[in-house]
Length: 543
Image (cartoon, rainbow, N blue to C red; front, top):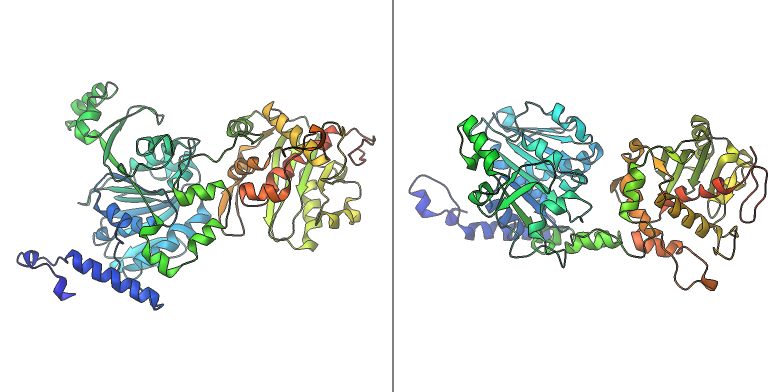
């Protein structure tokens, strides 16, 4: 690489490589990847990654499409700081389980050889302990962030998947920014990665200037454009934006507040204005990934569903459809509803013993207060588990219903649940003039109950996390919000009766089996049923 050292800088005793030298290193990396060899030269790729490093904004939000190499560049930009022993750096992910398989795993590709890692604490110590440190942590409970990091100096912050933290507000970002300071002689930096989200997420509003309102795609000319802001209130709408610090300062909601701050601190108004840039990532720029994992995009697209399309194409739009029976607003109201208890305990389960989820919910009246879900359960463990779940939650077996189709037939043959209520999707509805089958009846009645705010759910349950067979983590809240899209009316049904779309179409709509939402609406026929009475479409049960 001697031939690529810039002679002008050499005259001043500095070793600076020319751009031709950088391009040579990139070509060498591609060559080694094609040969199946390890890459030793850490060089940002041309395009997206290079653009991220060239920006000098206080906050960089990068991403917008899958496969752009956003996490790598977020970690790479920390390398100039590792030589300073006074620098503390932090990497964050929303959920604790995602730290290990997300940002921590990615950090090994960047930091290996520069320091020692501690797997138990997710911490890097650079240059044999003589350099900076970087610690990876979760932000699972936003209410504790202020207490956890009060007084902590974070010269460098990486927040992976920022949209996980901004569903309801931008507080997590701004709480961490209050610790993004440095007395170690380096400029504080904060870099956040993200995938596209719609207007149900506050991040979409925060980045609104960059996004075309008609297409919900990033405006190419605005990607990488530096913006300035001052937050004069708590909501994302209470932010003054401008192309210059002066423009922000002159905003009617800013000038008076900032003047008062300047008077009390002796600082300039510029010290209170923050710079931000959003840079749109693109898979086409990530040549290394093309070579190292040619099937990456096919695996991402195999997830299916509209949300996957948004991730790949960079569409900042909520996944919704006019055909959905439940809107996002309906679900948000359900999640926030006051408890609907009456002391009568019930339970319902969607049975699966292979790749899909086995899901069981417990109800006190119309309040959902407990649940469990898992994949790949061994058949011999299911019966004792269900019995323990029912006993723990005070549910009599005759007040328990389960999906009796497919693998559920195995439970029907068990004497342990002979008093329980099998749920047969294709059973006759209570009124065949209105519904085509039992499943359609319960689905529509469940939707109406949600819209009429008859159900409630414990907030602690909504925060529970699970991992699907592809290794993606999700909360119950996110899953229910997603699976509501599987509740759609089948078109052109015989006699105009209501019929829910079939399971194959449901899977196409959301990319997987709607195990969680189906387990919920199955409970409806327990409410409909009367003790010791047989009704058409329902099995007999007793108290």
